[in-house]
Each structure stands twice: as C-alpha cells, then as structure tokens.
Length: 221
Image (cartoon, rainbow, N blue to C red; front, side):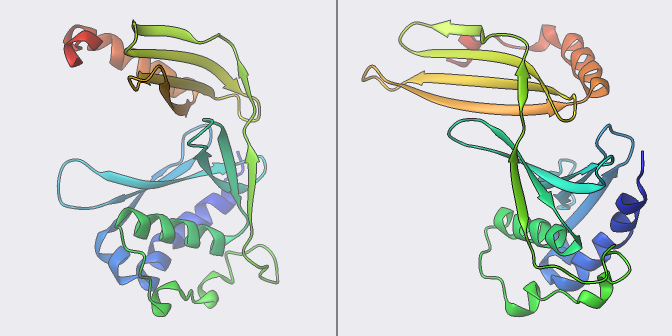
C-alpha cells in the first residue's frame, strides 16, 4: 500500500487541530490504525475516563490516495462515501464533527481560520483549490436476504442482511429494527456497519466467547 500521503497527514493533523481550536486542544485526541485494509484515524474526547467517546473516523483509500468519511442516510440506510480532497477538507470535517459532538455551534472566527502556511508541504498540488466534498453512494452486493432474528407479533421485528461493498470488498451488515406504533404502522430504523476480513474474525470470536452472558430479546421487554 502507498501510505506516504496518509503518514504525512497523520504527522501534522493533531498539531494543526490543536493550534486552530482551543477547545479541541483541551479535549480532542486521535488514534491511528495503520494496519487496517483501509487505514483510518479515529478521533475521540479524552475525559480521563476508561471509556472513550468517538466523534469522527477518517478512512484512507490507499489505491486512490484519498481520505474519506462514511455517511449513512437516516431514512434509507444507504452508506455514502464523502471524499476529502485536501488537508483543508480534512481539518474542516474533523473540526465540525468535534463541535457538533460538543453541542457547540457558536464557532468563533478565530477558531475556523486555518493557517494555510502549515499545510504547504502537505498539499500535493501547487495551488490550493476551494473546499469541495464529493458524495458517492457505496454500492453493496447483498449476499443474503433479510434474515429475521427476532419477531413479536404486532410489537417488534429485528432483521439482518449481509453484503459486500463493491469498491472495497469489506463486509456490510445492515440491521433493520421495526417497532409498532400502535396504529397499524411500523417505525423502521436501519443501522449499517462495515468491517474487514480481519475485523470479522475478531467480531466472531468475541461474540462466541460471550454468548452465554447475553440476554434474549424477551428479557429486554
């Protein structure tokens, strides 16, 4: 894999965010996962507690040498890929995600100004282009139909569907949760996660090791 661009951005990203936003400097941290099929950078808040609160994940498409984030349509459950063209796009997305997580929409002018001189050596082009985000839907080859994992008549239904993302070859799990509203309508909520082959093995092992500790859906009712 060609990770030169990934490594260069990782080397400057934390310092750049710290210098542009005092609140991020106090609370924001990042974790680099270089060995994944699509290397990624996870951003989280450091509250001094054992559990970390993640607010943004950047993925890196090594063959195309581009960073992107994943977005899920809340109504249809479609997974989309938002491509970040340059370092300014990356900074903006992480910064906005951080303030959205912190419930702070009152960004000051000083916070949103980025010192472009810090990124001259990072940008591979001689001229900085205007910020643009490209949204493309991730196509999934669904390998199974919806499989019902739980069903209670006139109350709830939980189904799962497995597929493979066409562009990356990663696994895709779609969870469909349907709950009755009492007026013969069902409210549907979809959640989608993607994972690599290595991650799939880890997930299977973790779940298998703790099956005996899990409660059934009836116990949650």
